[in-house]
Amino acid sequence: MADKRTVNIALSDPVNTLLEGVKTAVNGVLEHEIAVGDTAYVKHACKIITPFVPNLQMRFCMLNDLTIEEASYLVIARMGLFAYYKTYLTGVDIDESVRQETFDATYGEKEEGTITTITPKLNGAIGGVQIISNKTMTFNTALLKSDYSNLSGFRDKNGITGDMIFLHMKDVGMLVAANLVRTGHHYQRNTNGAFKAIERKRFGREVFDDNTRGILYHDAIHPFLQVLKLKIYTDYLTAYNTDPTTAAYKWLDPVVKKRIPVVPAGAAWLSAGLTVMNELVAIPNVNHKIPPEYAVLVDEARAALRDAIKSANADTAQLGRFEALAAFAYGVLVELAPTHSAAKAPSLMKIADIHLGARTAGSELGREALRGE
Image (cartoon, rainbow, N blue to C red; front, side, top):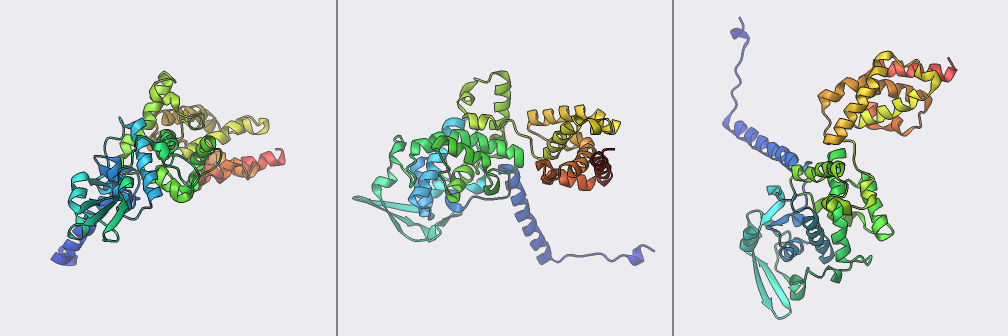
């Protein structure tokens, strides 16, 4: 009977080809996300030259329409990252890099007096290295032969010198690594408080515009493999717990140090929930009404959160048993203190919506407390 009700689906060769092509493209994006930490790509002009050579990177950036100042930011930023984190930044994503030999095969360079002319070969399309404008460009030869041993010679529109940007990347490298742990992203314009804080500390005010921050805090470090960037942070925790004066970590600015450790992505809801529970325990007419099953879990949840912070990884299976506890805490909070920052925490709100029973129980306790019951 089943055979009479069954129709076999036979996909045509064109459809199979289409599906395989799409799958390959999608898998490539997934592989890129796993490799670098998110699905975003740096623009072509910000790809990293491998092996890295400052003057060659400068050429590539300007040939692909970065301004001299933008290209200088990127080159100096990567120099700073290598200087402080070269033992970590040893591998880059293939889609965000260009090999030296590919670059050399794509461009022809001719020096005449003070001017150097660079011309694309074969329409500038060898190995995916594409000049956006596909045109011959001329540059001041002295610029292409800049002395990168004297970074103080670079000064941007705010008066910030190259050596200060170089130094700045010591702290930026750690902030990006910590942000990857905390949010799963490198640098985001709408959550950049720590980056602006270190700017104010180092330069006296917020000196960079959004475009420059994107180059320094995102594009400069983005091509490097995520596992290597995360290790900057996890090794810091290990070293700090063993000996706070270990190696270069002792040179981190206090503005950065006080922001470490961070709560890893996936555990923010538990951190917010425990913050609320700690406050509830301190309220006499609420404390004794907290259900025993939640009261017992508080200490275990604290330990689990400490482990997550220490390992820089939120184990979903391990933390899942505390979701109802967090939802209950949220329910109490929105009744007693609806303007509290935790009451607006998206991760905690999401958990509360999933565990409606626990949230409702918390809300009822909160209302009872307000009535003085």
